[in-house]
Amino acid sequence: MNVFDLWLPVVASGVATHIWSSLAWMVLPHHKSEWEKFPAEDELQDLMVSRSVPVGQYMIPFTRGGQEVASEEFQRKLSKSRGMFVVWPAGPLNMGKAIGCTLAFFFCAAFLIAYLTSLALTPGASFGRVFQFVGTAGLMTYCAAHFPHVFWFKRKIAMELLDGVVMAILTAGIFAFLWPAASG
Image 1 (tube, one colour):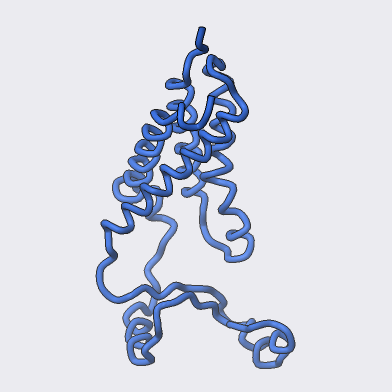
Image 2 (cartoon, rainbow, N blue to C red):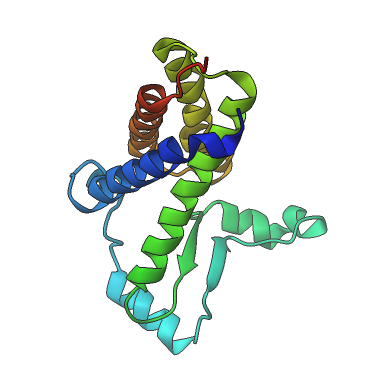
């Protein structure tokens, strides 16, 4: 068996995980608690416009490392608020492009999970074995990658992990249900 024999579970789980992700962020309330309004939102936006802050990723305080980290000025800044933020271009988000890229990610993730599964399992593998293997690969795909980022950048991810578990279960169930029977 090769990965292309699993085209149907790849397509079905890619679509299912994309639908779940869309529902989780646009309909369900569980991500709303992860974000808050910045207390001085208008002033911050006005400052960014007046300083012509370019689109990019920023850390506060910022250092390139080395001697600068030991400087008195940097140490003073560490005693204040610390954080990071991303500046996007002005105007609305390009929803079509974002949806397309997200869907492409879910198809690529499903394809890679199918590739691993095609190496590990044979046609006719039991529902439970396929579910176990694909579910584990799904958890690694949709959940594990968050952790190094969280350790360094202190983001809230509990609800993203919940979404990842649901996506892993959806993927595992679809693959197990659509797993090819043994030939012969």
